Structure formats: structure tokens, C-alpha cells
Image (cartoon, rainbow, N blue to C red; front, side, top):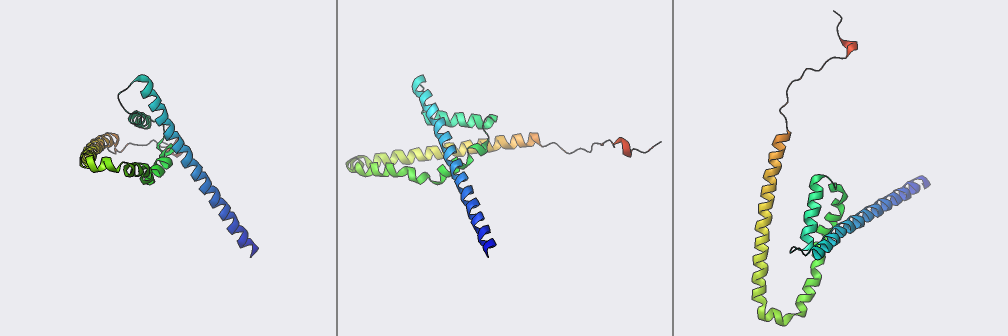
Length: 163
């Protein structure tokens, strides 16, 4: 009986350790992603670029991922967590909207029009980008897959027939 209790305790410790390591990995990756944003935002402010720091950071991260400077597994857990908890980041905006009820009553329809129009433009742009990326990936995949050709493999010297 004590052996099974010991095994259970060992499994619980290893499970807790694995959960702790996973949580630490997520925190570290989120911090790294935030660091990319901070550096990009700093660069935008000091270089006077007319583009938001988040966009520059996104492009820098994309370039690093595409050229192999950053492996996708180095940011995947943090990015997955951020995407899964994305709804939490809209709570401050909802609270701010409640504070400005008068503005929403007067110009709410204009704001809604801008939000809907902007959302549609983003959806079209993302659909276009995904389609173009998919075509590019297909083109690269077709170039990489060679047609199998039967190539004679030389036999090792020990197995060659004696003539």
C-alpha cells in the first residue's frame, strides 16, 4: 500500500513540476514577446517612424521567424496563451466605453461605423495575406519535393561478388 502512495506522490510532484515549468515557459515567452514590442516601440519613437511600434515589432518577429533567427517553439507557448486569453485584454476598453456614455449617445453611430468598417478592412487584408502566403508556401513546397529517381547504391566492399 505504501508503494502505491509513494508512486502517487511522485507522480503528483512530477506533474506539479511539469506544470510549473510550463507556466515558467509561458511567462518567459510572453516577456520575450513584450520585450520585442518594447524595443520596437522605442525604435519607432526615437526614429520618428509613422508606424505603430506593435506593427514594427510584429514585422521584426516575422522576419526573425522566417529567416530562422528565432525558432517557432521559442514563442509558441506564450503566443498561444496570449491568444487564448485575448478577451481579457478588452475589459479595460469596455470599462472606458461605460465611462464615456455621453460620447457614445452623441457619436455612437459614427464610432460603430468606423469600428465595423475597420474590422471589414482588416478581415479583407488578412484574407488576402493568408491567400498570398498559402500560394507562396505551395510554390515553395513544389520546388522542394524532388521526383524520386532510382539511383544505384554501391554495395560495400565486403559484399561485392568476387570475379
